[in-house]
Amino acid sequence: MSERTTSSSWASTIAQALELGGVDCRSLFARLGMDYSALDDPEARFPQDSMTRLWQLAVEASGNPAIGLNMARLSVRPTSFHVVGYALMSSRNLQEGFSRLVRYQRIIAEGSDVSFHPTVDGYELVFAIHGDRLPATRQSAEASLAHTLAFCRWLTGKPMRPRLVSFQGPPPENQEPYREAFQAPLRFNAEHYGIVFERADLDAPLPSANEGLAQLHDRFAGDYLARFSDSRVTHQVRQVLCRLLPQGEPKREAVAQALLLSERTLQRRLQEEGSSYQQLLDDTRRELAGQYLAQANLTLLEVAYLLGFADPSNFFRAFRRWFDTTPGEYRARL
Image (cartoon, rainbow, N blue to C red; front, side, top):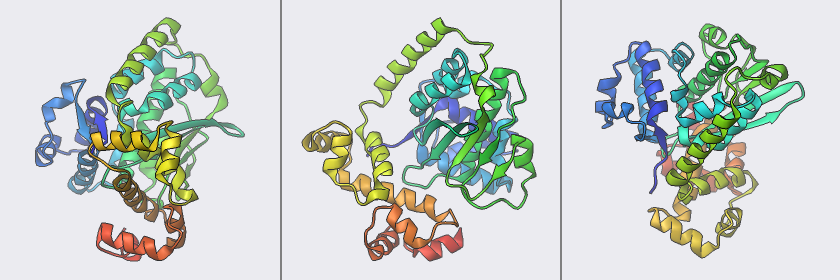
């Protein structure tokens, strides 16, 4: 089955943030069977689940559950975001830049889906962080928030203060590192990870804007996406499943229609990528189950329905098969 992956440029930035926290990433990479030297290869990519384990081991090694916020302390480099960083830089303003980030996010890391929309009093950038077979860590999401904001401050040359920063999951015991990193009101147990920006901050012209370069970077990014992931139906099916599951168990026919494919073509292309529709449905539900149970405000019944189970008892049976425990015991451990 095709694995989600993370670009070497983003993985390298994560490694720098962990090393800033005293973690020996070289030994952790070796322990996880990853090639540390590949961090310098711009074409290299790392399995998403290996990156998830890296975060888990780094928290254990450092004893610092807020280590993801170290991403705000690094010297900002556009290369952290692969070619997408340069596309952002050359945009007219951050509003246009974020539209590019949404379009090209998969180049940086396939484990993130980014959306961007206006709100009553500003603009919100929303991050949905997924794992592959393992549920994504909180630190991975917090790192994305912290580094994106640091990048925006660097791009604009201004100490931007968001209107709000939202986090899934309960508030940490020590919120001081969060206040220091974001300099903004914080909301925990939120529906999603996101940053609400002031409208004026996103509409202001960027000092590095260059329309000719922006078009050039669009072409580079488009070519990379076409080469790397447009052919990977596995990833696209997962995205459609995440969207459709809250409405009930999606039929293969509905997913094929959403991707403008026939059922037979969908089946064949998944087979070529070493997967199947049923396997992807099961994997996506398992991954989301881990994420939803980390949100204390969701009842077990709500989690079952969000995963598309009409009968909660089917959810409980599936959960025991996935995690060898009950949803209640799993949540208690969290």
